Length: 197
Image 1 (cartoon, rainbow, N blue to C red):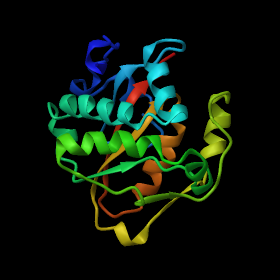
Image 2 (tube, helix red, strand yellow; image 1 turned 90 degrees about the vertical axis):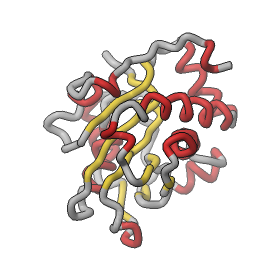
Image 3 (tube, rainbow, N blue to C red; image 1 turned 120 degrees about the horizontal axis):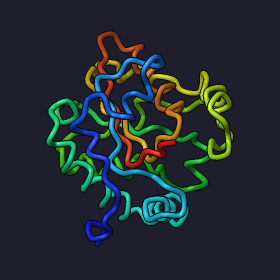
Image 4 (cartoon, rainbow, N blue to C red; image 1 turned 30 degrees about the vertical axis):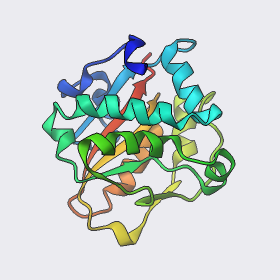
């Protein structure tokens, strides 16, 4: 069972000015930001995310999402979000992979929080190169003008944006910028893992 793996939890959901939240200061306005686990190369969390993304083990993403949601429920700022939005993949990448790993994690979270997942609130209109080996500025350039808002969902105001791993936060910041095109939008961020320096 995943819960017996003793993964390195952050506890950030209960700390407003945590390192994830601070990583967005000066980039984008967020109500709150958290990640459930620390991400270290070669350790369990990386292997689990690899199982989800590249081996198609969706049950891993659902299970981790549920465990994450049980923590998020402890903090009103996350629990009060009305809708969950996964960071979108470009249609070509989603087609080749067969799914979006962030959507799978979001579905696990939604089951526990009893919220709706709206995977098409944001659309990725540019297929970007993988961020994995890029430096901070290259990541920012790589995500610039990549996302657009789906106009039919502009009535949502209180949004929980979900991703698998936050490294520099460039992708999340680009998504949140676009979500702020909705008048009065409030955006919270929840990622499964945080690759801190």
